Length: 75
Length: 103
Image (tube, rainbow over all chains, first blue to last red):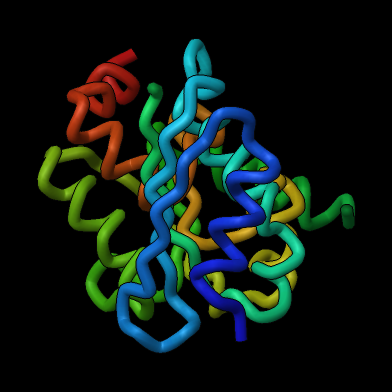
């Protein structure tokens, strides 16, 4: 099992100037949503922005994180 | 990755302007994210073809390597990887999906 805090920390540590809000959508510890705001998304396409977030939890997605829905905002 | 699988995927994504690897079929999606992507394309009246990754384990594993994207569904437009369900939803909301399909 992975926690909201662990996901938040992973994202915020890896993406400069980022602020991540994590929601456990079904309250099951498996399906999460990340709403990430960061100035480092500026000038990047959606695919690249989502990849940046996915990369931070790549290992977890193979093991204990079933799904991470992503919303990115340039800020 | 396996050459045969790569060729199969190459062929599939070129078979239709909009192509999606999904779980299940557009009529019977087997996962909420695949269902969401189908809904977005249908709402935009966008024609697309699909491949059910549950029908072929090699393609299911291969497509993740091909696009370097860890999850299903995966949408391709004009043979180019566009993203998964979140990206399709965001593109549709921004009105950019139609532009991509129209190009």
